[in-house]
Length: 95
Image 1 (tube, helix red, strand yellow):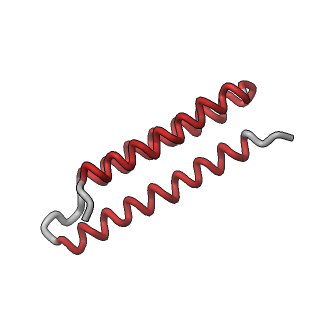
Image 2 (cartoon, helix red, strand yellow; image 1 turned 90 degrees about the horizontal axis):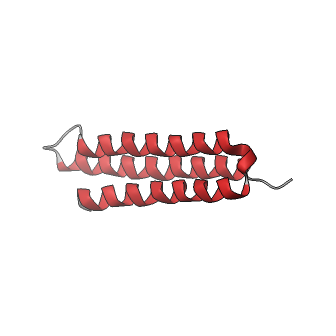
C-alpha cells in the first residue's frame, strides 16, 4: 500500500497540472476567461475534497476497508481530472 504522503503528492501534482494547463489556455483564449477560471476553481475544490477524504478515512482499524477507501480516492482523482481536462478541451477548441 502506498503511503499517505504519496497519495497526497499524487493529488497535488495532478491538480497542479490541470491548473497549469488552465493558465496556459488563458494566454491563448483570453476571451473565455470566465469558463477557464471556473475549471481552475473546480480543480481546487476537487483537491480540497480529496485531501479531506485522504485525511479522514472511514475505518482506520480495518486494513481492507482502508485500501478500498484509497483506491476509491485514486479512481475519483482520475475520473474528475479527465472530466476537467475534457471541459478545458471543449472550451479551447479552435473553430
